[in-house]
Image 1 (cartoon, rainbow, N blue to C red):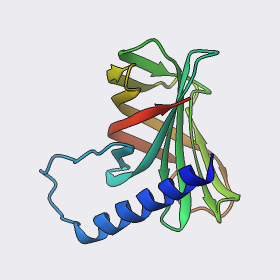
Image 2: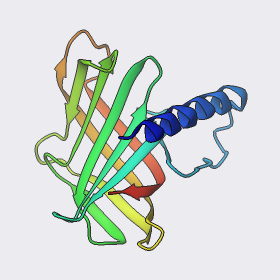
Image 3: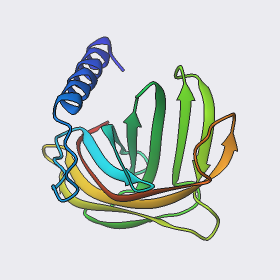
Image 4: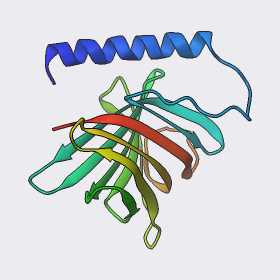
Length: 168
């Protein structure tokens, strides 16, 4: 990642956090507002949103989705699919995980798909020319490592929406 991309990411994160603080509203009926390079979801029935990055690897036709939250502890939801355009993709073992860190280097929890459990990632809009992608996700992950983390044994991400520009 170049210095300019890091500056842009930090600026976007600062603006997002500032807007989140000043525009908080407890209205469960409101439709989520989704801007480019963002995602929104519920995590165990609580609002969960932040910055996201989508990468396309043309060598193996994969699409990697990273949803990143940084409220002191860094949290990352990772999903990877064999990309074939608009459509629904089942997420199986090894295609989705979640981890949280302290100080961006010490892993305090790690989650993965349970055996025989699938998640869902759906690409609802794909513009190859402008490299834009939008979609939804729904996934449950189980804890497979904890180092003092107090998160529950299962994380349920529901009603996930994302929108972003592909990075190669």
